[in-house]
Amino acid sequence: NAGVMQNPRHLVRRRGQEARLRCSPMKGHSHVYWYRQLPEEGLKFMVYLQKENIIDESGMPKERFSAEFPKEGPSILRIQQVVRGDSAAYFCASSTTGTVSYNEQFFGPGTRLTVL
Amino acid sequence: GESVGLHLPTLSVQEGDNSIINCAYSNSASDYFIWYKQESGKGPQFIIDIRSNMDKRQGQRVTVLLNKTVKHLSLQIAATQPGDSAVYFCAESGAGTASKLTFGTGTRLQVTL
Image (tube, rainbow over the protein chains, first blue to last red):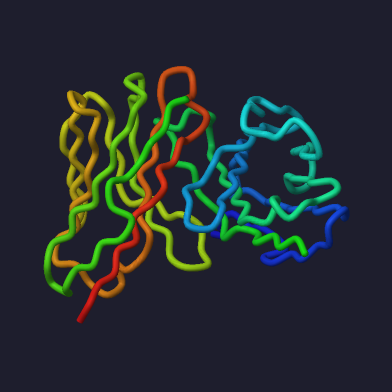
């Protein structure tokens, strides 16, 4: 029973480059969430997706950030023209439904993005 | 905006003692609360949850207490072990935000031998 998988685990980018973070949810899960964690802080919600749909992107920065969850394949969080302030750990979680109080969100190990 | 915060950033406890980690929340509409444990380099791991219609819930060695009057949540760990050393986060979801979690800033628990 594989859990939520994220890759790469560590990603180093120079300012201005693009970062692509991948998340494969647990088997049978069709709901994916992305969170960002700055050092010594809690996780901050970014976006909630179902297959081919963005349900809630209220936590996504207005520019440079985008997310998708295609019909086939992993969910992708894309950050264009990265800046140093994007350095953080990005966590993906998945669940069987979209209501937290009825279904636990299982978290992946995270991708640690470092922008030089 | 609404936030979930913690009183103590670091808690040092001797092995075998009980630990209490506290959390304050500000969203009175919150109706579901979760405690997560995060070890270094890993993602958050579910520990225990509680709904707003309860004031106490027990698991294995852990108890969560909810005081809605003062909007306070606590996690009690009995007979703390070295493996309990981690950062603990409370998180909440509320009416209208059922799809996302709002996390507190975390408390680091250090277990000394």
